[in-house]
Amino acid sequence: MAARRGSAEWKGGLKGGAGTVRVGDGVFEGNYSFSSRFEEGEGTNPEELIAAAHASCFAMALSSALEKGGNPPDSIKAAAEVHLRFVDGAPTIAQIDLDVVGGVPGVDQDAFQATAEEAKAACPVSRALAGVPEINLTARLED
Image (tube, rainbow, N blue to C red; front, side, top):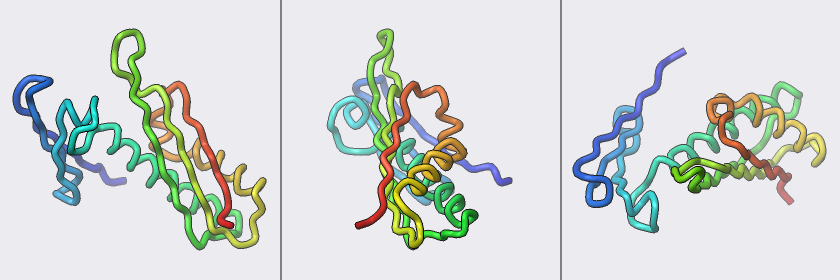
């Protein structure tokens, strides 16, 4: 399998400095700062990038699991919310909430929930984040 890249450059001290983060070969490039990470300042932050990675990986894993079960989805809309909290005096990713809505013909809510739980466990990003104490999942079918 291919290796994937990301890079960042930070200039200055923690609170007064600023950085640029790059995904791949420039697919996404954005600014980040102390303010964008720990306050409500402009720019992105590592936790948003982790949330996007987790949501996209989980959506693919769920789509794959549904397809293998004979029910390919029309759509999977996944979102992740990463909670950064102080634990033992250090900023820590302490919780991730995954929310998914699926358009899946032929699948009832119980089967969708069970498949979503399996996909959450199998998703490579979920597995990489196994040290996060709490990863919650809300899964529902489109109305």
